[in-house]
Image 1 (spheres, helix red, strand yellow):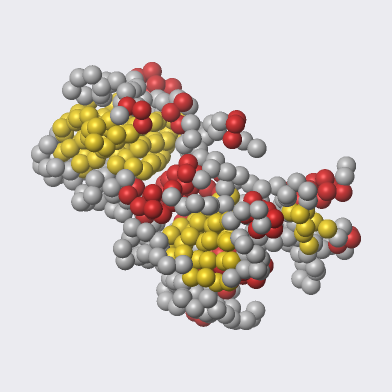
Image 2: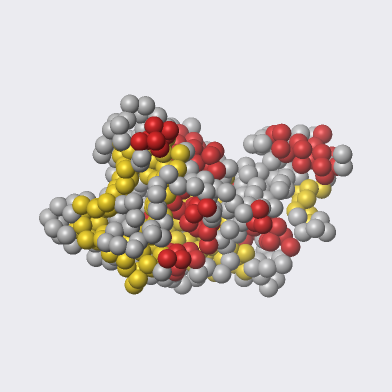
Length: 476
C-alpha cells in the first residue's frame, strides 16, 4: 500500500479524530490529479494527524487550491446569520461574515465576496461586500440567503430561482436553520423540513457538499434542542456534514455572555476563555475545511429519479385525466380542473383544487385493501409537488397522510414559499390495526370558499426518506 493510500485508510478509520492541543497538523499541496494531498509524513508518528470533520468542503478546497475556476458557497439561514457589515474588516458580523474573513486569510490568492439576500425586496441578492481582493484572478463568492424570522422553506417556491437555481457557481451548501422551525412537530417531521430544502437545492446544484449547522440552544429554554437533534438525524441518514454549534454552547453552560438576547449569539471577537456566541460558530465549521485531505463528498438529490422509483398511489402523477377528475381520485367540496397556466412535468398541466364553498375542499385516494394490509404497521412517506398561488393564506398548500390511528396528520400550516413549485414531505407511522390509509390534497383546510392549491404529482412510499435512486452516470 502506498504512503498516500495508508494515509487515506487511517483517515477513514479515525473519522472524527482531531489534533491534540499543541500539535501541528499536516500541510497540504496539490497532486497532479488536482486533489489536495498531505505532505510531511513524519507528523503521523508524532501524533499530528488531523482529520477534517467531513469531506463536504473538500471539493471547494480543491478548487481554491488549484485556482482552476471561481468557487461558491451557498448559505441558507435565519437571523443568526444574516448580518453582514459593509466594512470588510469589521468584527461585528455574524458567522457567515466571519467565515468569509477566515477563508480570505486561508486563500490570499482569491478575491472573497459575501453577497447578502435583500431582506426588504425579497426578490434578489443585494450588493456584494468584498472581504479581500486577491493576488490572483479567481473569486470565492458566499451567497448568504439568510432572512430574519425565516424557515427552511423561505427560499423555495417563488424565490427559488433568484435565491438558488440561478446562482452561477455553488460548491458547498451550508444550512443554518432550526430556531424558527415548528417545535410542535415530532423530531422526524422537523427533519423533513431540512430534507425539503437540501433535496431541492441538490436538483439545481448536483454533486456539491452539504453541511447542516446544529444551531445554538435558546438561552432560557430547550426549544431548539429537538431541532438540533432532527438536523443531526438528517446528517446521519444522508451522510451530510454536521457542524455542532449547539454542543459548544452547552458545554459552557449557556452563559449569558454568549447571547445578545434569549436566542441570538453575541457578536464580536472574544478570547479563548471568554468567547462570544459568534466565536463558537466558527470552530465546528472550519473543522470541515482544515486538516488532512480526504475524498470529496458529492451529494445528489433523492428526488432526482422519484417518478421512476415506485408509487403506492394509483395515477399519482395525474397523467390519466380524461374526465371530470384524475383517474383513481375522488373529490369533495372542491372544483378540480386541469390547469395549463401552471404546468408541471411532462403533462403540460397541473391539478388545481379550489374550495367550492364554506367547507374544506379536497381530492383524495384510499389505498386498496391489499395495499393497506401490505403496508400497515410501517412508516410511510408522502411526497407532493405543490404550488400555492400568491395571496393564499397559511391553510393553502396542505395535504394529509392519514390512517385510523393517525386521523389528523396534515402538513403543517405555513406561509412563505408562494408563487412557485416546491416539494413537500409528510411522514406517518401506521398501525397494524388500521382499517384505512388515505392521501388527501386540499385546496385549503380552512372552511372558506376560493382556497386554491395546485398539485403536480404525489408519491407514497414506505420509509422515512425519498427513495434516492441516483442515475449511475452522476455517481463518482
